[in-house]
Length: 111
Image 1 (cartoon, rainbow, N blue to C red):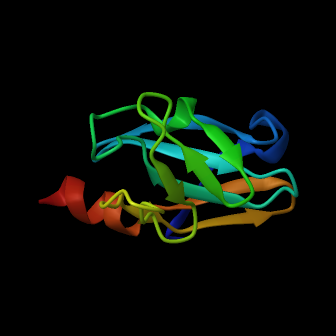
Image 2 (image 1 turned 180 degrees about the vertical axis):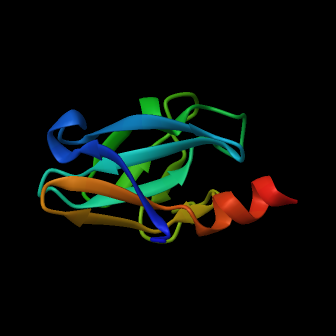
């Protein structure tokens, strides 16, 4: 059984935007960059709980819509003077489909 689950077609996620995936762990934001790369982060900013899925995607970063904290889509780390991080999730793009790594999701729901 594959550890990756199909969550959407790439075209279902707007360029420089995101889609929300609800899981047992909470919400995960799946982002698409201008050059069609995909990333997945926890959807909750550690600063004030802002929904990162509603943030502005620029390059390989996303800016929280509440207080403009900027997070690296590769690492989940806050950039600049802000301190904090959000959890990242492995994601793949295969034949135009976005696949999310369900390994941690399954482990968490089994506990």
